[in-house]
Length: 333
Image 1 (cartoon, helix red, strand yellow):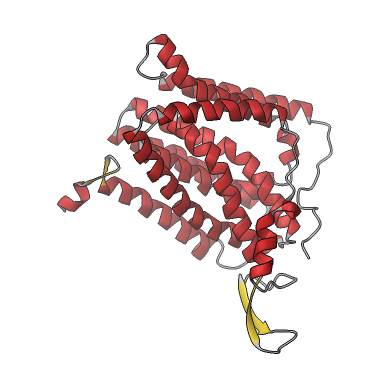
Image 2: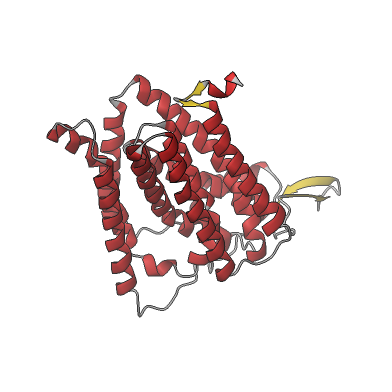
């Protein structure tokens, strides 16, 4: 049993196994029990699932407190809240992708489920590399911080920029390199059917597969912002990874509840811009004040305050605006 006490990225192996076992169990329960059959997920079911994942994510803070300390717990909660909020823009892009490829609602959960498996691996690789780089070259944190400040400032002036899925070069590349069906073929990512010209049975990708690839790429792009954001909160790989994954696990559930009303949070992007600037500036503030690090409790409180103002202001400003369905994009042909 000594192998379980071996350190991996600064934590005993058993702590990583506890987390991974919990995640795998949740995914197995999700696909094998809750969504064994394809069906359209309603708002009520989505809210229940989202609440379950949020409660589990927050409850894991108790495990962090038990095994580490109060400061680490505050860092985990801050990272969890930041990741959860940054995922809002990701939800918008996912809705556009599903609309563009005309993915029926009963198959959307399947795409998001397999998407989360890719996210778990990709985020793990990014965080592992990031942790190694930061451990060897601590000054990289200042680059991360400056990047976040510049990103936040840029977002303030580009919050109305539209995402145009049809202009994506990856879609054109995939369609040139593989056969793709015109329409969704049930919940299959690939199907075999006769080629219309040769009659030879050929493997075709379906729009579900293209949507899955686009969602993975979108998450990779968003991770460029979110992973450095968490590293400026804490450099502990365990806290960075667990907060990332718990925030993303509930993203699928949250999508079905928020996709139809995301317009109500239109002004939250400005709060996210301010939040990125704040997170990036913490390391510079700490140096200026002579602190070892920015107090985690202050960071958590300020994060909540910024987001609360953004949410309340958005709900107030959009109270009388009609909803705009995000999945009304023209289907890909």
